[in-house]
Image 1 (cartoon, rainbow, N blue to C red):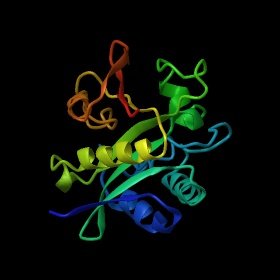
Image 2: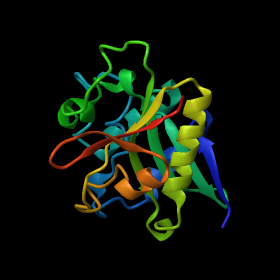
Image 3: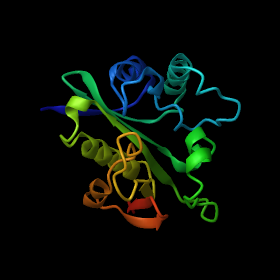
Image 4: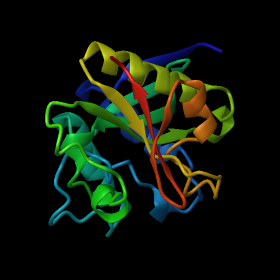
Length: 197
C-alpha cells in the first residue's frame, strides 16, 4: 500500500471536500458531516456552522482557499483516504471548538515567542483504519513543524477510548510512540507535546 501525504493547499480543495462528502464519520448521518470547519484559524463569532451540511461545506471551501483550515491529506492511488487538521495553536484560540471545548488547555500568553503547532483531529476512511495512516500524517506534521521553526507539536487526546465520535483527536499510544509526553491533564484528557528543538 503506497500512501502519499500532501499538505493541504487551495489547489486540493476539490479533493478535500470530496473526501468529506463521501467518507462516513463516527455515524453515517448526513447532519454529522463536519468538513472540519470548527477547527480553523478564523474567529467563530457570528459564523453559522450548525444550520446545515451545505453551510459547513461552503465554509470549508472558503477556508481551504483562504488558508484558514490547515493540515494534511493522505492519498492512496490518488484517492484521499485520510485527513489531519494541524494549525498554529495561537491562531486558533477563537475557533468554534477551542472556545467551546478547550478551556482546560494552557496557552502560551506568558511566552509570546513560543510557536506551537496543534493537532486537532484525524479522519480516516473506514476501510483504511488501523493501517498506520494517522501515524504517517502525524509524522509529516512533526517534520514540517520542525522545518517551519515550531517549538512543539501539541495534541489533546482522551485518556481512554470513549467512542468514534469523541476520539477524533487520536489515541494516546500513537502520540507516545511518536515521542510525545504529557504536558498537562484533566480528568478525561491529556495535553501532549513533542519538543522539536
